[in-house]
Amino acid sequence: MLISGSGTNLQAIIDACHNDAVPAQVVAVISNQPQAYGLNRARAASIPAQVLDHRDFAGRAAFDAELQNLVDTFVPDLVVLAGFMRILGENFATHYTGRMLNIHPSLLPDYPGLDTHARALADGKDQHGATVHFVTPELDAGPIIIQGRVPVLANDTAETLAQRVHEVEYRIYPQAIAWFAHGRLVLQHGQARLDGRPITP
Ligand code: GAR
Image (cartoon, rainbow, N blue to C red; front, side):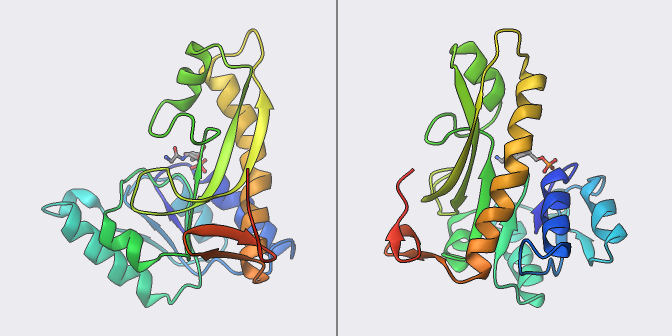
């Protein structure tokens, strides 16, 4: 799993693997941020945790290449981006086509990029949420696997809305990973399929 921050999604996935809701094992956690709290969560669960600081590299391509080398040493079946706040280049995305997932805190295709909660509030949306999708080279635009919706309440701030979105993230991300682990979820001809049927969000 690749993270940059607090790693609450990482924790939800570790827990789901431990209680057999997800028939998988987190084999490594890699962060581009040395201070990411999620590294502590990984170590507490006896999962190898490593830092690859993007500031140590001359550019995106060099960082991506080294990250790919590092990830591949663990021979993962699936690469899971969970709050990984670096844009990955085309080569990296292509290398893991069909075996890399991301979670994004909005109902894609609404609000790719940053500050999704504040933008949903500013637009007066009455619904918001999170999306798990296969990663493709285009940012936050890969085939959608599952979305979780939450209501936007009259007195919400970006923080309260983010908290509500987090709760659905902790449900939908383990669900998507379980589908993949069971062989039920695949990316085929650029389309996400569950049990052979195209997923239409
Ligand atoms: C999550 O809300 C995730 O959707 C978001 O970062 C947060 C990470 O929280 N991801 C992105 O914004 C990716 N563009 P966590 O570290 O506590 O899991």
